[in-house]
Length: 316
Image 1 (cartoon, rainbow, N blue to C red):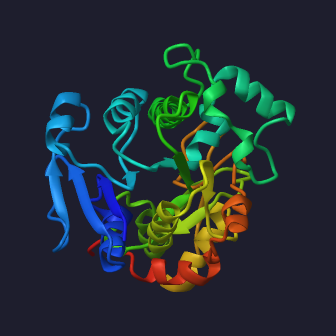
Image 2 (image 1 turned 45 degrees about the vertical axis):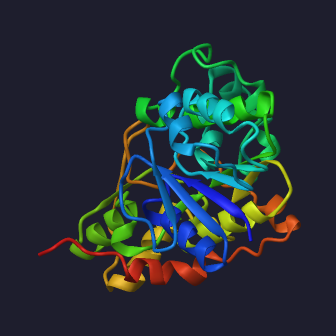
């Protein structure tokens, strides 16, 4: 039995993680701003994680075997967590994202390296493709090289990883998650619903002329991977992705098979916005490190039909 704190944990695979840990017999606590009610048998602490003093007060004298941080988005949040949890936890697992590899959001010098072939390319990227600890510090990364919201999200995750990695205060893991799908209405981003609704209605899907494949993972598999990671002793970044990267047209064909209607496409111009998961650059992930450490990933083709079938369609 472990004492596990989940920061966030109020929705989607974070909520599944909390339930999984409780059912395994672990002593589980969630910490958030009060959103949602945790499962029975799970303690809840209420605090704004950005408020260092409030966070310390909420934690009191508690310590944990593992902290799983679901909602760390900025280097400032990471710095607060690093100070507060130093000496309180034996292991810290941060949920990061595959977007840290996205060439369109990398600082200019790393984007140049990508174009020259020394960074992410047609071969799925490994964890060694990006070392956040060697990135420029926040505020020194130069121009935002891609769409602003995407850049802010990806750069925030990169810099948060860097804070934990540069001078470790505890054993640390960053889980770089693939695009998470499944869960029906619980999948709050609406990205899979975008395809189900448009293809079912006969509405064209906006795609790039030559879209690249990207990586996916089922929401239950993501929760299971985080729980498995909490039990291990390895450190550093680790990719989490099901086998079988798909490009947007393959995703549309899978949706079409479920809704019984052929997809229609509209090709967007260079630099124009397209539908979710249509990418004009390559950064699908290699899951070899986690697999070698002992985690058995599933295949996208096995779980995607079910994820599509449970996705709500727009009324009417």
